Image 1: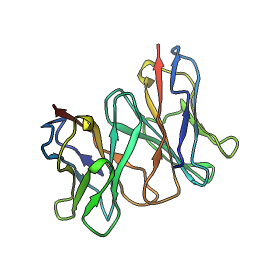
Image 2: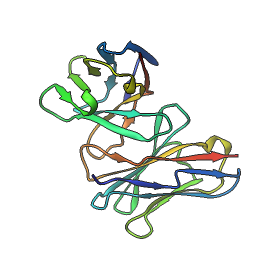
Image 3: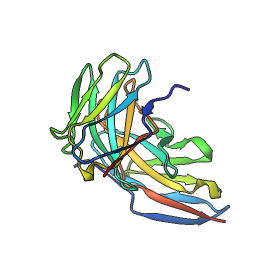
Image 4: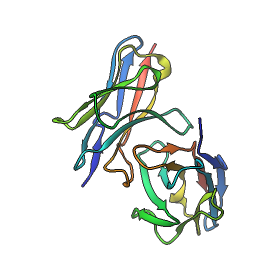
Length: 113
Length: 112
């Protein structure tokens, strides 16, 4: 079955430190990969996507993600965390252009002042 | 930047009542979707819609659910007889094809 795993329910990082939110996937073929962020009582905001090409993808708000095909991972990173980055982060995959997006269960990121 | 618009932002309904959630997708998009998120939990696929018909639906999307594109601009999700467990945030999304969607800001449905 196709799936997305976010192994951490919560990640705590001190402000100014680098952050990583982990994501691995189990999907056949060459999927499209996404990160979305959800702030309290808000919708899903697109952060970044990987389609093809350079394995390091840069997105909104200083976030980036690294695609690793051999490890089937797409970890979200930021060099220096801000308190305002505190939110719920979802990794997602789209197996091909006509398929639905499959979401991970989400990782709650807490940036500590 | 074009947006997917959902109305209402919050709807409270009595158990057993019918509810219609409305969405206006981005105008040149061809693929439409509904997802739901039970409070603070995983975002789950409900249904995809293309060329005026359902292209895929999940196990959640049973006979109580239906979708419609009545006038070429709106895309609606109807729940015929709401249950307490239908309480969730419902997200509409649209796409022009690959690679990604644009999500709306969601409708929070509370069934009492």
